[in-house]
Length: 367
Image (cartoon, rainbow, N blue to C red; front, side, top):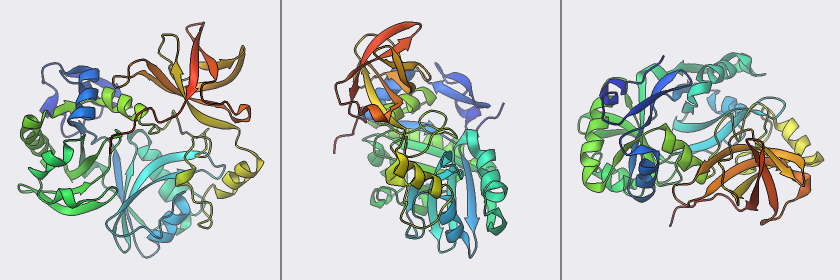
C-alpha cells in the first residue's frame, strides 16, 4: 500500500484511524472524529494531507495549444500566476478526470490530477488521446511533490504566521517560491471544502516539518488535523464533484451541471462534438439536490423513484454535520423537469424513503 511523506508523522497520533483509499493508507479521521473535524473547517480551520494527489508539468512551445485541446475550459487566456478548474473528456463527451491547471510561465503548466486517476490521466495526456502525437514535454513530479490543504475561515490568519504575504494571493491564483521559514513552497488559494483556504506544494522531504509548523502556528486559532471523512462531507455540502460519483467515464459535464467549465465556443477540444450534440438533442439527465424527509442515509447507487418508477440514482449522500438531516445528489431524468419541493423516494435497504428536490449546493460560505 502506498503512503504519503507524512505517514510516519501522524500514524501514531492518538485517535487517528487509517484506511485504504484507492491503494493509499490515509487518515479517515483524527482524534476529533469526522463531525468534529468538519465543524472545525466550517468555523475555524483544518489541515489536510493530500499528498496522494498526482502532479505533472507540461512545457514547450505547443503546451498551450495542446492543453486547449485536452481541456473543456479555456486555457489560452489563463494568465501566468493563475489556475483554473477544468475537465478532460473522451471523444464521446464523458469525463477522463477533473483537474486544476496552473500557468507557471509562458510555456509551462502544472497539472494536479486525482490520485486514483493519476496513471490513467498521464497515459491519456501522453499516449491515448487523439492528438497524442503532438504531445509536448510531460514530466510526472508526483513522487517528489507533497501537498497540504489549509482550509477554513481562519486559514489566512494562520498561514500569515507561516508564510508572509500569502494574504495577497487571490482566489484561483498562486505564488511560487513562498518561504515558510526556510521551506520553499508554491501556495494557491484553492481548495475542496467550500471554504476559503490554500493548497501548499512543497518537496516531499520538507512535508513533515511544514505539517508540524502549520499545526503549531494554528493551535491558537483552533486548527485541527483533518482526514478523508470530513473532506468528503465538506465537498458534498458544497456540491464539489468527485470522480466516480458526480462525474465519470459514463457521465458528461453537462449532465453533472458543470457547463460553466465547458467552453463550447472556444474552438475544437476533445469531446466537443459529442457535447454539442448532447446539448442540441437534449441532455438526458441532470444532477439534482435532495433533502430526505424520512430518516436514512442515501448512498451512491441507491435508486430514486417517482410514483414507483425509477428515474435516476444517488451519486453522493450524507448526514450533514453543518445542516443536520440527510442530504444527497442524484442524477435524475431531466425530461421530468422536477420543481423544487417535488417529492420523490429513495430506495434504502428495500424501503422507499421520502425526499424532496431542493436547491443546491446545500452550503455556501458566508461572504
